[in-house]
Length: 152
Image (tube, rainbow, N blue to C red):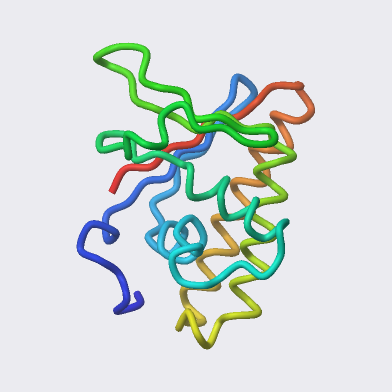
């Protein structure tokens, strides 16, 4: 595993769920290199910035950034917890999340040296992204949005 992880990032679960299917991934590289990519690089285009904004908006289930609650953009919004046993989530169209993940993946590849991503992390990322794309395909076929959150 890469030495670039914060202690909190070592035990991470990213949850992508919809009424059509779900997956929970235990992958610190997904959080470090994809969801937080905007902290490592500057987005060159408006499309890049929008994609990174979607990923930045994914809330931590137990320690959400209060500024994110109620945030929204094209095809996404952050929903607050509905009760004591609930947590905030990013609700997003499958198409929008797929687009954001693919753009982040491309940005990661083009900035791999600067971001210092290892071959091992890239391999794990590919596996995690394929699992997410499977859930997104199911949600898209069912015409439902997906909810995304993470715990570290």
